[in-house]
Length: 403
Image 1 (cartoon, rainbow, N blue to C red):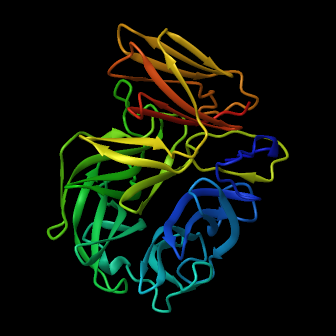
Image 2 (image 1 turned 60 degrees about the vertical axis):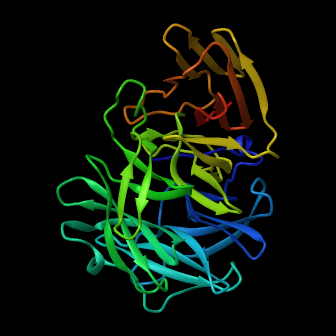
Image 3 (image 1 turned 180 degrees about the vertical axis):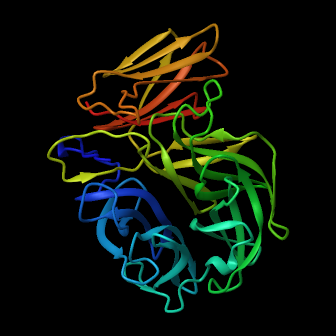
């Protein structure tokens, strides 16, 4: 897969690397008066390769500064494929980072600790979770992406794992000290896909499990993308490790490119950021120095059995009210069928075509809204990055647009 981006398309406020490749956002945390965010990173090429952690910092969740690589694959347990995705938490004034160490035959969960948020030391007794902690039937070569959180005076970790029978699961572990872990239970099983980047947000007595999946069978407007972010709202009994859904599985973002979610809890609010890409697509822009970008950080809330994302207040957006059946923004077209409530988004005449696995251009998607008599649209166009909110977040649409 070859994917390259020319600097003329570099966005202003969407995160990109100075050079090289980035994918999944990792380790999002507020620590020592700064927001810290990390990305999967290959510094030596503009395509996926041995994974490092690239570090960004921010004061406002809008403007991020790249400050360098903080972890690289240099240990027996991570030297082949690298330091895969993970998350961060503060304990005793230190930042604890949990991540997956990946080799060709095995994936294990590891720990790195920082006192200042910039310099990290890998725990000498790594790995902290490995095949000994896996329940029967799960494969240690598809076992990754720890999401750590603190609840009810205990640390918990979500992990994605594949079962030998073909389905995959979100597993729950607990710890008193972030060093020793016990398996609690299987929270969720999903057929015919590999779950990645499990995440969770809490609001009142509800929570939402958020996870990345691929190759789900399309059901009308659902699952049109090969790779997408899904979620299920429910309630979680942490002691028993039982997740009880209160709604059906839904898509987080209906756009062409959105994968690998990561969330932040800060001052009683939940924030979210995604990799602005679909691993099932490809494109080629000559003379590129870097590849990959992230969505904007957005606020996220649980509303009934759904999630609603919204732009941060200080992000400069454009707003329009659509009362007709057609709207064009640059080369982006929005069509509305008033009878069926169907909304279609098209991106046409891009400088660079984005192709699916069959080398066909990915130009059109559709979804349904409850009310189409008047549609409130709020959007950001940041060179090659586009994000659109429909009806105050009832539907969100993120994608690349090389124009």
